[in-house]
Image (tube, rainbow, N blue to C red):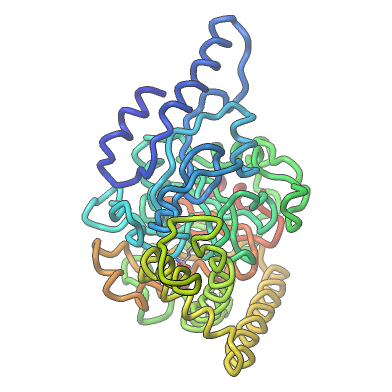
Length: 441
Ligand code: GLN
């Protein structure tokens, strides 16, 4: 544990917001004592992990990488994190990310842009950039990111590690700072499928504190070593045949498809919505939900309050000074799509499109077992580029947001293309996703 803390300390990649050294060493000493006494320890006992800085861990800072919460300390611990602590895992670090999960590059943060683990001139991806980098550099054995529209899968792809967005509701969101509640998911990042499986099993389950959770059964190691249930793989032709996709990503993806065919799996081309439709549907709903969720951050109960002439001014100044440009863009956009005169035309249309997208998936999964896609159409941009062009940044989410709107289980694996392959199955079929990843190895 001390060795890992020493690796994190210089913060070379800007992946660290807060080092949890006291807590980590205290917990490690307990595991040490057990080992000294000759007691047996569990699978996760003593295993060091990282936590995206949007999860509550009682008594430790939870900043969401924002000025607003830079001095905030969690009053309680998130369910998913508590389950890992109960299993004996050791939290080392609260990890840098895009503020409130708003971004696809981990540059929207007061702690400095996170650098890509493979090429530090490039972005780490976002919003769980620090988490993916810490795993890639082996500073942590696994990290817990959060995925609303791709924030686990995309940085996992950019840093060549595994990242899972489970089925919505499989893991409790209690204690995960809300971004867009209808797609927010707790997601593990790790260096192997087996590590993802173990951590997923520990965190899953029904939680009275999150009414959208459901009971799921454990995924066994043995179940991942068969190819039962994998007969047909589909891919969206329009994700591959378009002008926006990087040429090499396209070539590599088509090569991966050929490899799958050579393993005796049938491959089917499918049609899906265009990138602009997917991205605008997702951002309409995500902005509306975040405008609502962040309305409580006015300096009254939480956050860095800036006093002004009267209460209304105090709210305005507190929010104007403490939210980033990107977060303010989303709050303004969200309030606009929800406002009278716009909501029918924009917000309700977004909701209707989401239903159509889910319906589409239902039909697809009657014909195929797995849907395969590149994680992004583009390779990781240079640091600085996304801040200049938010629209381009939104479009880099084109291949991840649809699966979020469908609430499907979907996994990034570090192979196939430079930014990885994304494996998706029908709702509640997280096991099949991991099984297929194993099968492709
Ligand atoms: N990049 C997407 C966004 O900014 C997804 C972020 C996320 O999953 N938290 O909304």
